[in-house]
Structures are given as structure tokens and as C-alpha cells.
Image (tube, rainbow, N blue to C red; front, side, top):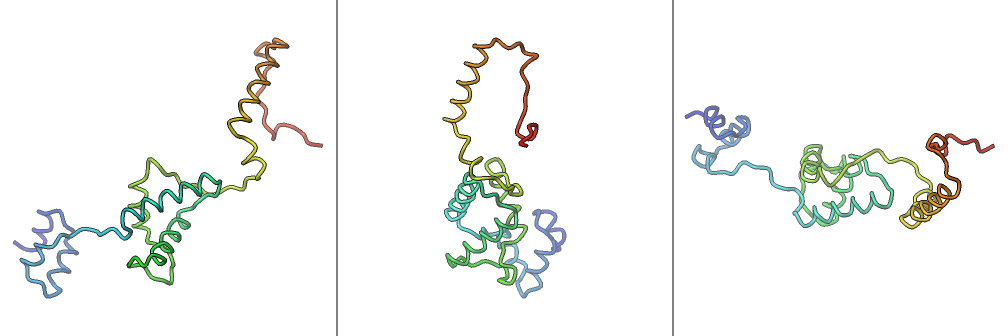
Length: 161
């Protein structure tokens, strides 16, 4: 059997199998290899890295894709984890990022960070919401407003001047 037929039969990229065969491997040795991608980051490190990204998100610092790739590269360098990426780019590869997001797609959502004031980030908590709802219910009960007199207005609908 040729390497193209073997690649199709065993669902292996034919270029990968061809590279192994052309690099002085005999066919038997090439067929015995497990052709798979090896994880760059050990699972324990990757789990801690994922938790760190969630912590950053909870503290209102957004992460872009490039930020995650750069952080992963820095983690690999600091922990002396061998990786195939160049130091010139100082970031993990796009394929690594795609596989990382596939593993954590239901737990992690990356967005472009937006500016947010400290007062807004710390001012709206569960306790503040409960206080607001209590005041709102008392006001509705005291004045018996009909539904046509209740409006949904945010800070952009009010004039400051």
C-alpha cells in the first residue's frame, strides 16, 4: 500500500505521513508512530491559566485573543515549558488558541475590553440592587402608578446640565 492510500485509510494527513517516510524512516516505523498533536501546556498549568483568565474577567479587565496568546507564551517561558513558538512573536500560535478555546468554549468568552469607571464597577453589587428594589417597591406602593406612567430610562436619556 502506498502512503497516500495508507493516509486515507487511517485518516492521517498524507503530507505528514509522507514527511515521515521521506525522512529515512522505513514504512513499518512510520506506521507505528502515533501522529497526534502533543499539548504544549501540561493540563495542570492550562487549568490554572484558565482560572487566571476568569479572574481577570471578574476584575473587569478584558482579554483579547492576542492577550491570551501572549500570556500563555509568558507562562510557558516562566515555567520553562518547551514550546515550538518563536521568541520574536512572543505569543502562542493561532492553532493553539483555537484548540484552547475549543476546550473551554462553554466556560470562556473573550471580548474586546471596554472602559469602565471604578464607581460603576464597584457601585452595583447585590446589596445595592436589593436596596434599589426595596426603594422602588415602596415608591410604587405609595403612589400607585399605572403602567403607562412607568418608563425605562438610563443615564444616556437624562440631561446633566
